[in-house]
Length: 260
View 1 (cartoon, rainbow, N blue to C red):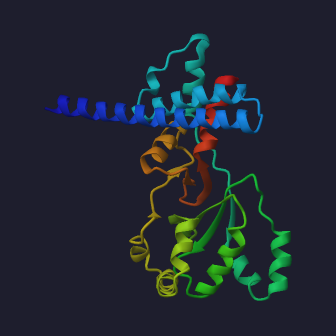
View 2 (tube, rainbow, N blue to C red):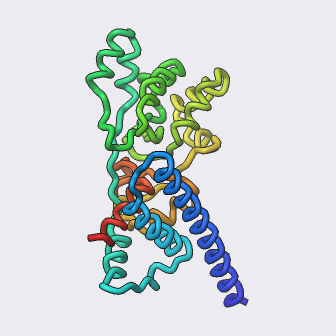
View 3 (tube, rainbow, N blue to C red):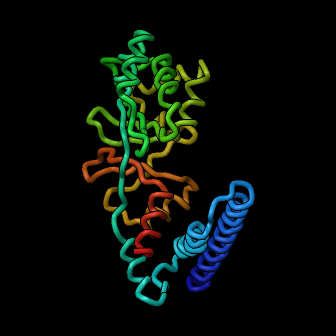
């Protein structure tokens, strides 16, 4: 009975891997056609990447990474990159900075210009649960979102406890959807200020699962595939937010390792 069930799960993974791979490959070739026909961009290098990426996705989703065999020892390079730890590069900003800026429009704009985040790193907004000494307001949080949504690398709103340890996070668009609504936003901010962690975790799109700085690239890809998201928050051994790991970043690392 157990063997039959294991075989069933294996078949399910196989089917899911094939469907995902074909979808990715089809979309990739459509993109290549558009780039060449309408923009006149050379696509030889991109074509190689498009051939390799579906292979990587298939191996990850189907659980067949260990079966990869290629000439020239490429499988060894791939496995080395797959088993190496994730890179968690991110630019974090505490909302306290935004609250101070929001007191005056001119001061707000001038300091934001000086404090422009690094565009090469994911940007996350950090909030503290149970901040009773200097409570948040819905207006402050809306001001924060107005500023940081101007940056394409703005990814997550991350919630920490009083000791700055990770608790949960939410995609920036999901957080905006909550605080945009007066009643819902006020209720959320009240729970945030009072330290009602359990209630906050019940909100849709709130995630408390994450990966660590010790997580391998392949396990990070599996986690993103299972959750159907493009990036994950990374924490260090002390439970502090270390940054963000992006799917594109991991796939690029695997491809570069193969190419090198």
